[in-house]
Structure formats: structure tokens, C-alpha cells
Image (tube, rainbow, N blue to C red; front, side, top):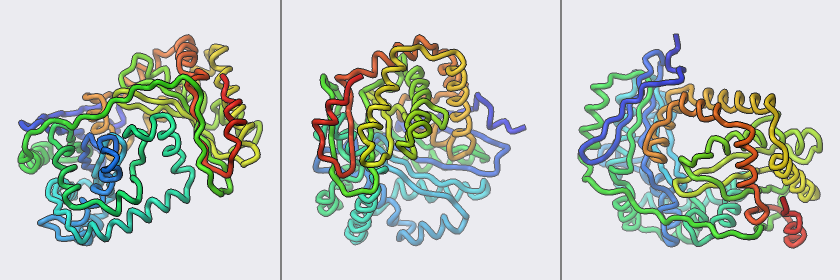
Length: 431
């Protein structure tokens, strides 16, 4: 019996005296264990001069501690136990994790705790890492599919708002960050109140909890950092074109939508899946299968505590950009005008629930889901709760949300490719 695939799992949440939260998810029938340390901060918590600092700091955490003198010592120890480990920085969170065979959890927890709590941020490594990060920026610049969201975010949120800036930051910032900058950011943003230690898999709860309390309990109590709220004022469609010589045009077409915990967030998820959630979705069938305009096209909803957006992304032949945009907008009009059939709605819901179930199969996915949920909404949503939310969505809900979200005055079209016809494209943006 593989109980860890059940809809309802046991999440043991402990709050330390300093406010740091620990979530333990026992999975006794699995052979792995994953430790995730996540803090609710990222590029959204930077000012313009700090932009890129959160991501740079994530890199620096692997450069050495008092106990482990350098990056090689850290990587060799984790490689030596066959660990799958890494870190990531997002707009609103930063996480460090290691997944291991269950018998090596003690080592993984010790290493991840050490780099999170005791990084020395050596100056010589800061100097060296500048070059690596600039190369990372250049790498993604050569991958329009991975950077179209930067163009879109600057368009929908504005380049002056933290959500409108990139996670990697501009090269000029990377070249000037000092050790003091890192220390200042670390003290302000890495606080117990916005930090989660999440462990899922096969482990001894008393032993693991004692280790976490010993190491993380030493952090001084401090409040979570403040964020700059986003207030949208868009009243007309907008276009941003990043002119670049490419073999394919990358586009992202989206509109402002709902934040976390909005009453219609499940209806929006079903709408996104209906339009672009799989190979039988409306956009995939219309854009790719019927017209051959794109290799891939998908839709999704992005959420933050105070805002969000709905977006469609596709890569198309340069000469077929206008046709692709027209086809996407035609599907927007259709879903606003005509209620989805009971058969199609049932298929979309089953696909969405199946995808969610598969996404929460492993100890790594479960540990990250728990940490992300606590950071984003202050609680952990059981898979059962999510599925019930999806099941309650009706055809009327989808049409109502489509009418609310899909409005001409809220359209944002971001493009990367060799295009100059901004005014011509702007005329197409009508729903």
C-alpha cells in the first residue's frame, strides 16, 4: 500500500520560539527523503540598486562555511551520497534543497542547514562568481523561450516595480555588489518569521526535529520583510517588443488576474487548463494541430499574495505572428461567448487533477509544496482540498471568470524577435 500517494497526508507543523516554522511529512514507505529550506524573499524584495542580489546571494551560499571551507567541499560531500541538490530564486521565495536516499538524510540536513545558517560569503568568491552569473545572464539571453517572461513582467507590472524587474538583475549591478550588500540583504530578508524548514520522506521525527531546533533555534527573532504592493491601473492594451535576430518569434499574451486565495482562483486554473493545459486543449488544437503555427503553446495562471496574471506563451514563425495572435484572441472570445460543455469540462477537470496528483508523487515535490504553501498562503493545502476546489467549478464559473479577466483594455503582448510593426500588432488586440 503506497500511502504517500493518498489525497490527505500528515503534515506536522512546528513553530520555534523565534517564529521559524518546521513542517515534517512522514512517508514511511518511500526510500528517499528531501530537505528544503525556503525563505519568503526574492527579487520582489529588492530595490532597483539591489536587483539581482537575491539570486547572487543564493549562489554565494554554496561557496563555503566555517565548517566546510569551499564550494568543492560542499559539492563533494553531497555528491558522495548520491544527492540531488540545488537552489533556486524566484520573485517571492528562495530555496535550498537536497534529496537523498533516506539513510543519508542526516548528512543532507547538516549540509543544507550549514550553508543556510553559516555561509561566510568570502570576498574572493564574490569576485569570481560575478563572471559566472554574467555568463548565466548571457546564456538565458540566447534562449528567448526562457526570457520572454522578463519582457512580459516589465510590461504588465512596469519596470519600476520589483515584480517588473528580472530575477537575475542587470549586469551593471552584478559587477558592483559588495560583501556589505549581501550582509545587509541577508539580515533584512532572511528572518525566522519567513523561513520554512520542510522535510518529507522516511525519517525519525524526534531526531530530525531535535537537529532543526538546535541549529535554527539560534536565529534571533525578527519580522518578515515588507513588500511593495502592486496596484494595477491599466486601461488600454499594451505591446512590448524586444527586437532580436532569432529563428523563431517568442510571444507571451496575458492579462491581470487573481492573487492567492481569491474566490475564483480554482475557476481560473480550470480556465487556464481548458485553453492551454495539454495536447487536447483548445489552444494546442487550434494553434498547432489545425494551423501549424507553433510547436508549443500553453496557458497558465501566475499568483502572488496581492496580484496575479493569466498568460499564454507560444513560439511561432516570424511571418505567422499576427495569425497566431488572432487565433489566440479568437479562443478568448469563444470562451467568453459560449459556455463549455459538460463533456469538455469533465475532461479538463480530470486532466487538471491528474496532473496535480502526479506532481505530488515524490518526497522532493511534497517537501517543496509544503514549504511553498506556507510561504505563499500561510497554510498547507491538502491535495484533497485542491481537488474539491476544482470539482466545484461550473461552466457558469468559467464563463464568468473569462468575461472578468479577458478584456481588451487589459491585454499585454510581449514579443522577442525581429519585429518593428508595433502599431500594426496593436490593432489586433481586441477581444
